[in-house]
Amino acid sequence: MSGRKKNTCSKLKHRVTLQQEIQTPDGQGGYIRQWDDVAVLWAEIVPLTGNYPSSRGGGLEVFDAGQLQALMTHKMLIRYRSGLHAGMRFAFGDRLFNIKYVANSQQQNETLELLVEEGAAV
Image (cartoon, rainbow, N blue to C red; front, side):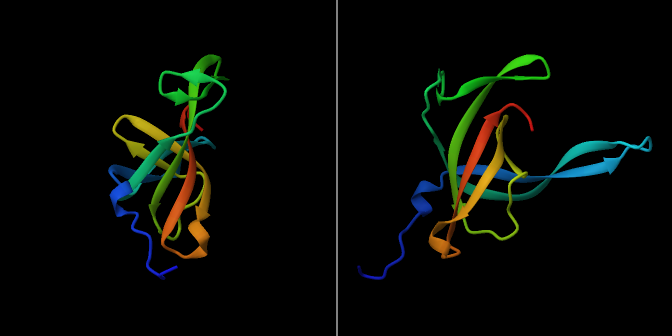
């Protein structure tokens, strides 16, 4: 191996917004859930195929709040960024991707591989 780093820049063609949940007290013992923009990043979004076909590839349908909703699983690749964790999400146009798992690719602090779900809100 030549020791050269693999160029992932050409794969990162989707502009996504990283968001973090903010909980504000509502004054009645509960809270109001809002999403705050953290950063705008370049990402690769790859739909993962599954046993449940849908119009966008693999996925399945789940009941949430008494309604049937489609749920899609994707893999995303971004440049390394500290502080990113499950529970955050990405916005891509009108689509939302909930982060379920974060892996530091080969522990090199160069890229992060993420398992995300699109569809039903968390």
